[in-house]
Length: 261
Image (cartoon, rainbow, N blue to C red; front, side):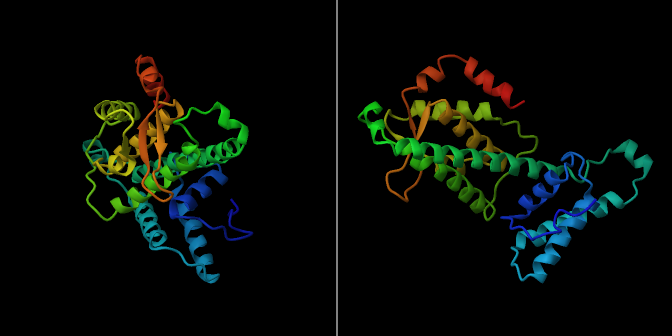
């Protein structure tokens, strides 16, 4: 199979973006990655980057080492008798989980960017003012994309502090929606809750990601909105008038629950 890197050296924000691009361009099943092939193409990209004086972050080097380690594990023969006693987990599983997690986050970011562009165009129409309530404004169009940056900054900081990955953690997006509901029911009406603080309360990356997706769902349902006191201030979450309507029935949460299965 010809390499997708034949014509030019594309720029990637991180190693997971590169791996996803290699997998998607070649229509590879992400759950059955041919690790030898992908490792070879990944290293080829790094060699070409060095030849073209393209600076790569330490994350690319770490991922290269991880791919080589996974490849080595898969090449080692497995004793059939030991396999009967203790079935070893696929060495690729952790990588697949990280790729799927990154792809979900990337898709959410792209969706928010498209939403921001559309809403900026809508809010730019001066006639829209007649349809706005006195206490409402185009804050969502200004702030919604910043939520992604807030979430990314929390994840980046989490790499430098202990984040407790709970074994077999069963937290889900609907769980986080209920968590947000309880949080806002305790908060006085009209008050805002810091998005950054909510993210930092979570003990695992999975919890952070489920919380992020839960916020997106409630923003989409117009149960909560995004607020920013200053141009470069923290992102706050506020309860909207549709909050009670959304939680009047468990059917909404059930529908979201089914969507994530």
